[in-house]
Length: 312
Image (cartoon, rainbow, N blue to C red; front, side, top):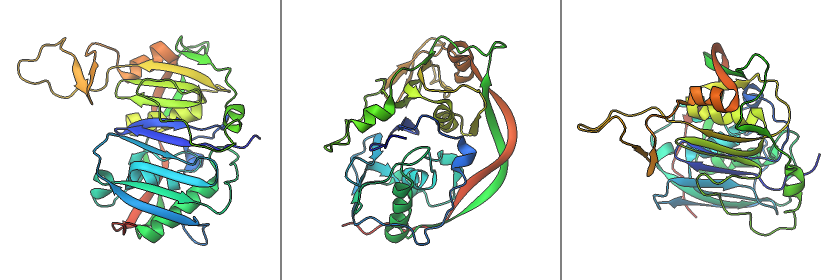
């Protein structure tokens, strides 16, 4: 399989972008099998951690070529999600415990390994996650353990009896492995996408949309889990990569006194049609998919202890 020199995670509020080059990532239950142990983990050669007090809503995390790892404006929960969510970052609800500052305080991390990261079979290099685990244990004194809990889950299945995708779920022709391989020459990675801008190989989610380029259903299920706050298991049977364009109206907060029914909802500075379809309805109408409620074992990462890091 072609190597994967670039992996990025960009978040806006609680939802975000997943840009991976792997064509066939397994489901979330496979991701949960990663052990919560830092024993004999590989480590970065050098690493710098600083507090980010910019107040920006967007965060960026990636491993550009040259054995580098960078995180900008990331909360600690997001870093834990990346470190313990191999091959895909964990949804926040699968990280249990910890003080409130793991969400409110944000950090910039720049680190470098002694050699280039080796590509993973089903996603980003596992070396990146292991090195980040070791860094969090050393600098944040992070101690965690895994538990399996019986929790509500969703199965992502086809909504139509003929298993035909909806009009906004189309087969992608982009070769992501070749695209990422072309960036192996080094240099800075491409800038994070703007809200609503389509990635060639990844997804951007705003409070009322998901725009994806050349992503598979396991990746989409991972992102949906963040949006519905529940594990989502891909059971669509759809193989290959797809372009996605999903728009919906999020759950509405209580209206202000005097507000009209048709007055736009403003979420994170974006006006949203209050009369649009819900996420569940949009999935069926636009993508030909639906979520079926089930119960099943879900692996979670439990935070036993953690401290603020010493900056350098």
